[in-house]
Length: 251
Length: 278
Image 1 (tube, each protein chain N blue to C red):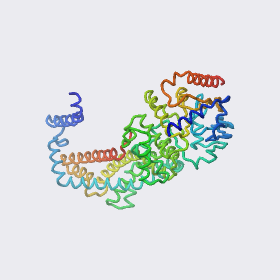
Image 2 (tube, rainbow over the protein chains, first blue to last red):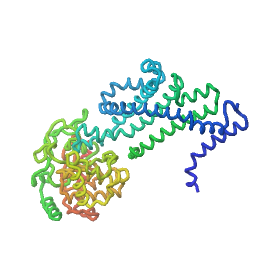
Image 3 (cartoon, chains in turn blue, brown):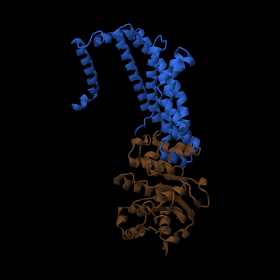
Image 4 (cartoon, chains in turn yellow, cyan):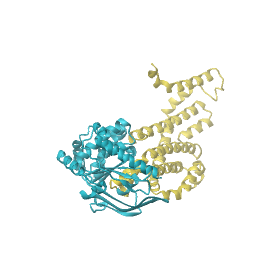
């Protein structure tokens, strides 16, 4: 009996949230203009996803994945090179850590000047943020490769290049995926913020902001949910790929 | 052939010798260590150390903690550099011979992203053997050893003993002239350790490969060995190098055999003498 209930445990929180929300709106505890009922928000979500909101959703997905892909293509090889040479990494560590700690949103004005008002700016700022996160993780993954495994490869006659491709690369994969997941989350945050402000015409950030400006609260909540679902979904997709691809991780 | 090899070994190992240190002279030694010196920081681990390792024998290395048991085989296997000295294998350098090395930590020594079969075949890839031949040679080894493990599994899907067996097979697949084992069973539970001892004895009798085994378990060291290399505290000297003449295959009965018991007692005596010397 107990085991049978186990898979339904996560549902409790969701049901609880909706129950509280529903209770608050039907008892008029909150101004209905500020917090519409779950049904209203749900309707706006459903209708929106087949219309403008759906279009905005696709736009945000495209920008986020684009930014992450660019970041991965740049950061993974660079991270491997840096990680393989600890001296090189140590000499660049401060610079990487500094820019990793710099809020990428602070770079908007600079990137606006560089790329103008358009997709390039949003994507490149997000990519900038994601690159540093991925780079950091890949480099650490390579540096933390098990010494015994490297020795084992060496003892079997593997050359340095072989050790790099046959051992270090695989050893760094679990950490690389951690970087990718963090990177895509960060990219989404930056993209949504960028869509709000920089002369945007579409995207989930634009959708949230526009609904708020026009005081269409159900539509705003719908857009927030769409953004949440996107973030959760992206993480889930990356986790699934990771489990498939890095099956040995944590074992 | 197996029986003949076996008989031969028992015969040579059984030659009575007044001084066990001269056993190397009966057969041409396989490995000669001359003038080996090694320091870690200010601690001298080896100072002008000489050793002959006889061919086709299983040598156990035993001694006080931190005396440099693993350091010795790591230097012979080229894992860590020596400060001075010369190590030759039939007069050849390490780079010119085929050898295998089995790590204590099988979990970190195997490649978890490869199936067990590919792990075993990996050293052949390093020798530029074609994929078809790698497969054939690995299958041959598996058949010869009579190993009954599903080699399509990934290492993390196997028990500790199975993983260590896979590492040993990975070391054997190149048909090494010499096999080094660094406390190969110390991460296993007792039941698995006993089983693996039998497996190793079988592999040794089967292959006749020279083996050097570091052990921290005296019974295991004596049980498996043709000669026990007893080291002193650092700077390490050969405290004694007694022969273990009990015939193979050794079994549980061997453990209570008077000759075995007296050899083990002798080793323990030497060990304790060396421990107290500090």
